Amino acid sequence: MNLKDLYIDFFVSKGHKQIPSAPVVPENDPSVLFNTAGMQPLIPYLMGQSHPYGTRLCDYQKCIRTNDLEEVGDVTHHTFFEMLGNWSLGDYFKDESISWSFEFLTKYLNIPVERLAVTVFAGNDDIPFDEVSYNKWISLGIKPERIAKTVDDNFWIAGETGPCGADTEIFYFRSEDEIPIEFDPNDDRWVEIWNNVFMQYNKAENGIITELPKKNVDTGMGVERTTAILEGVNDNYLSSIWKDVIDLICNISNLSYEGNERSMRIIADHLRTAVFISADPAGIKPSNTDQGYILRRLIRRAIRHAKTLNIDINSDWEQKIATLLIDKYQKYYKELVDNRDVVLNVLTEEKKRFNKTLEKGLKEFEKVTRNNENIDGEMAFHLFDTYGFPLELTVELAKERNLKVDIVGFENKFKEHQEKSRTASAGKFKGGLAGNSEIETRYHTATHLLNAALKVVVGPDVHQKGSNITDERMRFDFSCDHKLTDEEKKKTEDLVNEWIEAGLDVTVQEMSKDEAIKSGAECMFIEKYPDIVTVYQIGNDKYGVVSKELCGGPHVKNTSELTKFKIKKEEASSAGVRRIKAILE
Image 1 (cartoon, rainbow, N blue to C red):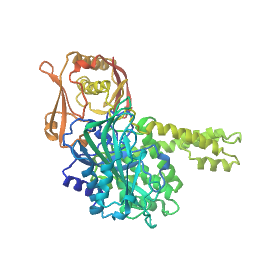
Image 2: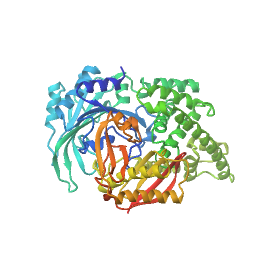
Image 3: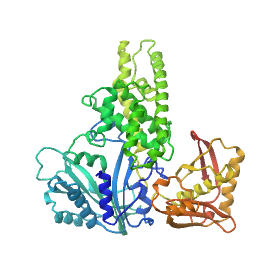
Image 4: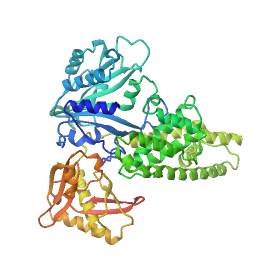
């Protein structure tokens, strides 16, 4: 049985409800471009909002991290990965969480106890040593010499403030060497496979830490890493998750994996991530900003490495790999089936654009070398960043003309660019878990009113395609085949303000997903919602129901809290999608 299925079945047997995987593009979270962890979509519930499925939850979550993009190509790094998670929202705590993790690993996955070790929180001036976790591990048969006590690595907080607490990490000895008697967490042969976070405290802005009245458990286990461990391979790309993809790349390129590992890993990883981004309901297309920039970069990097394997770029090589990936994951993620044609089209069109860009790059190269001048680091990086020239190609072309390339200068510019990218996509929750400020809550409700107004002014076929909210403004993407006229913008703005001035109540109700859809409630990503959903309704007797949507919240109680709504800009987002930027004055 697949690891995901085993995990879900196990935790369902322990009273957990399975929740759907959220989309890879988060809703209303400007701190990250993508969902980077299983807990991220659950932030409102970890903050105290009740979940329609109760207090015990489990899932497998699609995650994307791009802060280590340049590391992909080794045996362990991936941009897209799946995270297994189980949660207790004020229900069970350390005893049950640790017991079940141990039971799943040793009884269901049959991992020998002697290959396991753990870390626990050693304690500091504010929070005591985690004696409960330590004693629990001892009672389960983990020897004291296999338990390491640390401070920095075993205390979890999402940002500077908010819920926090000790965590305990579980390690597996991933080596043929004799297992050391004493566990050293700095020994690379010990690989972390599971992390159990115990949200027991709250850190205030003044630094004071107090115990939470309602304690949560948040756990995470990586599918790729654990699968490789269970199958006894030290290269993740030799596990069953990747083997068929790598075999296909070998077949397409007529080359063996050995000696070409890095390029083949990059192609496999980047195309898998590109498939999931372009299949996401948010409708992301390759572009030069935000998620679209990451998508473009991934596809183009895969193409560059396909070229190094002498793959005929004009063949349908990327379609074959993408089709295999879609077929492989479609059982778990319905959007891959629904958006199969979209995915394949995105890959083909971006490949065509990139080939044209490479041609322009060759012309640029000819221009800058016309006077037989050596290529400095800035120009080498310009060719790389703008035209997709890998450094090796620039060096190769320069060599043909007996010219030199400033490789050190290129590497310095590359590191500078890398640092900017890392900062942009690091996914730090700077404000802690409590990211929904009062103004953000108001903006969240305003998106519902804007969606409703656009349906009245533009037409009922308008649907939300995405949104992004900060303390300063709201951004709202919607399906529309034309640029809004000044009249349409004014009517939309006036209608939203009319509803704000009317002081309409915002009410919330829980019901089955089927009931919600039958009642006319709209939602952006139907797949992400569980069978029991939260429906927010805006309206009163005079105006009727203005808006009815499935949503996780948060929202104001009455539209009068929103002040005046003002559209600042309306522009194209991607094909068939428009974008409105607006503020509450």
